[in-house]
Image: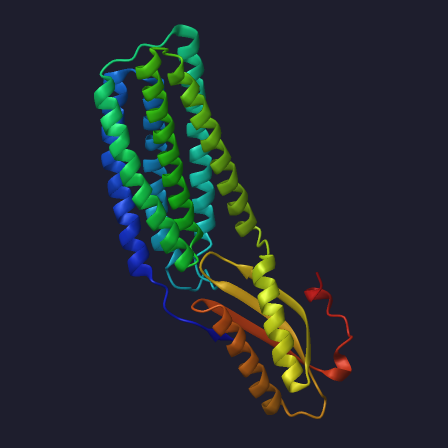
Length: 305
């Protein structure tokens, strides 16, 4: 088995702590703006921020747990909690979308009254700018460290940007036309977009929790293994791989000629494992099973899929 090293936990921790602080500040500002203006679009933005703050709080805890090393009760580590966090964030986003949609419909039925428009626009515009920078940073750090947790949080922050843009467009149209129904219409459109992102996060989370394979990564591993075994006159089969959050787990069977000693086969297998782990740097975990050519076609029922 070959393990690779640095995780970048410090960078991930800093950006998530900043995300939590920003979520708390923007939540207070948006709730104040919603109360002062009475706008359903701003209310929808504030409601999404309440959910976002709860989700980020959960994600900060999950990030610490995900980087906790393996122990006696969790032999493969704790990083799968990242998928749980992403799913929770997706569920929270979806709940916010339904709440926003409900509030928009309620205002359509009972009427819309908007006040203190300038204050609401200023708060919403400032929040959109902060969230745009933060969201892009979270997604970038998440991709760099293979963290579904950070990517999910970044996508959530970016949905907040789109919500704020919808609010600004609605309030701009209201100011230009004096037609108040732009406000709930924009809130409903924002809710639909937020619901779309929530579904995507839940779908990706379930895929990770159920060990769904990544076809792109599998193709890269197969191409590498094809080259490695061809250069040594070997073959392989029963390749499996999964991504548990920040760690790629790979296993396969290597077939050697019967005349090779265990020591010789072990050296070749270690070299191949090292190549695969390097491909998945920095968090590749690779295990190979050695078998003689004479036993290549024997069924091993516990490993068939």
